[in-house]
Image (cartoon, rainbow, N blue to C red; front, side):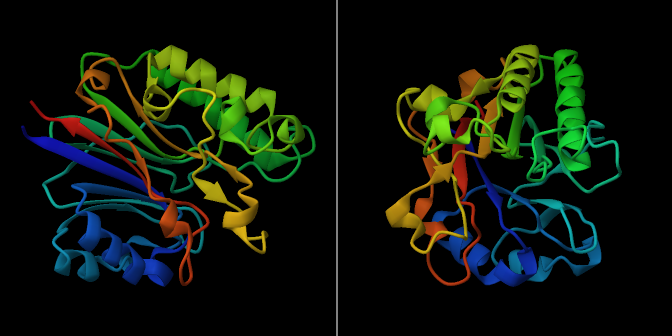
Length: 267
């Protein structure tokens, strides 16, 4: 059976962590790697190290010092016009066709510290971004297999955070954010593949703060990184293939995010 394995990883500076990424690719050999927060312009992207590792196809959407996404593949990709979610011209989405799927690689705004759009422009931008996603995906073609991945900066369910009660007023888990994400999933008829594979009562995290002295011991994580599939793509998602590579949060100079993976049938 022909398959397509897709990994999403907020790398928090691709130039700083390119050796780690190449090591990951060498060990796990995904077909496609979607990076977020690459923090460089297109011309600064270290493409040669990935080409040397057997990943010669790229779609890089960069910005000086901030944001940025990149889709790296060992099979051909065809860029397509991305949806307009941002509204501010940030480098936050790459869209392409690969392996018979449309693939959207998204870095959703974090939203700052204060969950009040009246006093926090960053949070207002996040809510606007979410509203645009709901409208666009609500009208999207459901007959084309669509995979949406990325650091969406929202932990939507109770057990996607270490303490539901304590984080209800913390950006990434406030009701206004989680309700907005639920509306997007409903509008696009998406399947949240992590929760298809793991029951809602199971704790799942993909991000652990740098602030923790021992992130693994305290385990105060959040599930901010997502893989969704629309009705045409969800049946192709292979059961048992969802992975969180938690070990990548450790080691030398890690990102604060772990990679997540899902494998799809191309048949």
